[in-house]
Image (cartoon, rainbow, N blue to C red; front, side, top):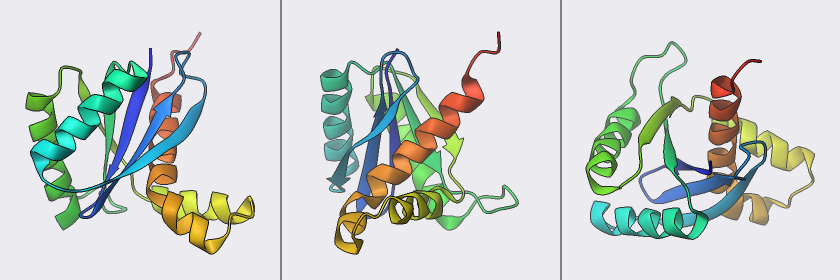
Length: 139
């Protein structure tokens, strides 16, 4: 099972992917937003390239779990993706993932310019890792 995760913003979509065992997660790419349809087609191509069978979309809720203005936009895009894509689309609370991704890259010594280029995909990787850990079957 391979899963694609999305960190959806107004201008960019960070994308991360799991390995088929769902143990490893890596940032994949950052897409520049165009239209919902063009974005959906680009995500569809990534699903085909990675053989992903599920998409997880981070939804930016406030710390108390209430919706933010950005979460409403993201949920509208999720509704579109659920109609457009042939795989299940799940949501996950992404509160704090961008800060966590930034801190991890700083700790790894990634330069400021490289962090800026990778941040959205790194945040998608944090979203996916959190989702996988939460959904891992307990033995």
